[in-house]
Image (cartoon, rainbow, N blue to C red; front, side, top):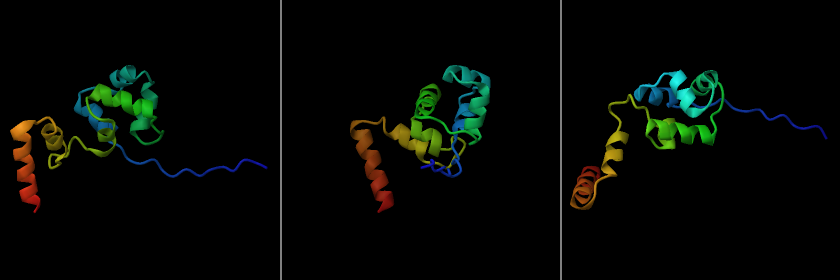
Length: 108
């Protein structure tokens, strides 16, 4: 039986390029840190070639983010709550409880 060719859907948009720009790296520098070619990085950032888990985790480490943030969070969106949540996660004790109470009250 002949192998069945799978039709792959289009690659989804990521914010990999936006995060690279946000941390001030050009493609050449980022590609070197990721140990891939600049051409491959360009294709990944342009959704022309898929990223691998290894690429995503390495980029997250270099850019100082979590892997999922590189896919879902736009660093240029000033109205986003993600950066606030990231900072809030670092709170402890009374400060954390106070912030949680404020958020709970606002959402009630």
